Each structure stands twice: as structure tokens, then as C-alpha cells.
Length: 174
Image 1: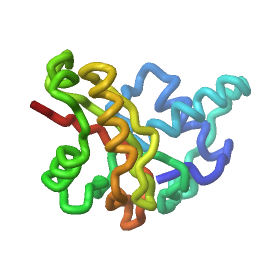
Image 2: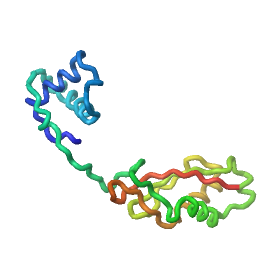
Image 3: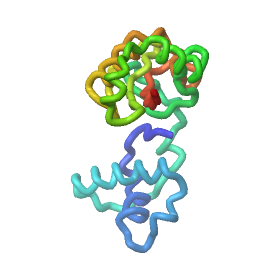
Image 4: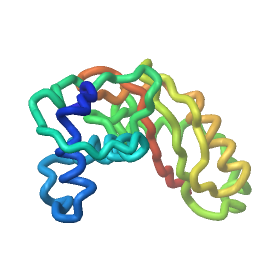
């Protein structure tokens, strides 16, 4: 639900009694959407110094609207997560086949894993690749290079539409 329009005459009683009054506890608010909206409205009413009580018509306060997916949003959680074509097994195979690390680089590494974060664009392209937990400069640079050259992924989906999504993966090496 989304707040559709402000009708001061119909919302003041609800706001003042449900939020400002100490007689009504937060548990009595029936939905999270109404509660969130009321806090925003309460701040607005406080700023306007409105304290008039009137009757509330709840049907006019809210109307169902489908959430609009903004094109440049990056989803940290989406209904269908972005995946490498073939799944994690194919991703780990791709990484292993394309890493060019010397034995010396691996021996100098501070750990046997690297955690990367990146964005899978709705087009399947990878960008914003970053090292979250590194194992050493050479190892980190090589993992970044390989991931930046990654083939396209299957984009994450929200409500059936491809969206930009954040991914974090840990890669182990020997």
C-alpha cells in the first residue's frame, strides 16, 4: 500500500489518537504500512502545528498500487537471485580455469579465499566488482580481472522483470 493523498480533515484524528496520544500503543496499529505512513504524517503535522480533531475515513487514505520498479535501483534481495549461467558449479569452474596465479602468489596469500561483491545488471553484465575480503594484492587483482571478464549472467528478477542486483561470492583456492 502506498499513501495516495493527504486529506487533513480525514487523517488528523487517526494521527493524533494513534501516534501522539500515549493511550494507544504501537501494537494497536494494524499494518506496518499504516504505521510507517503515520510517522511521516505525524512529523508533517507537528511541523505544521495542527492539532484539530476530525473524523477519519480510512478507505480514502490508501489505495493499492503496484510497486514501481525504478530502472537504476540495485536490489540486495530479489525474488529470483542473479545466477551465473550453469549455476555456482560452472562459475567456480570458470574462475578456476581463468585464474593465472603462480605458486609464489598463492604461498604469499594471507588466506585461501577471496570474497568479491559486484552488481549484475539487468542485461546480465557485471560491474562494480570489489574485493570485500582479500588474500593479498596479486591474488585480489587476479580475481578482480577474471570476474570483470566474466561472461554475462542471468539477471535477478523482481515481479518477473530483470533488475540490477547485488551479489557477494566467496571463492576458495589452493
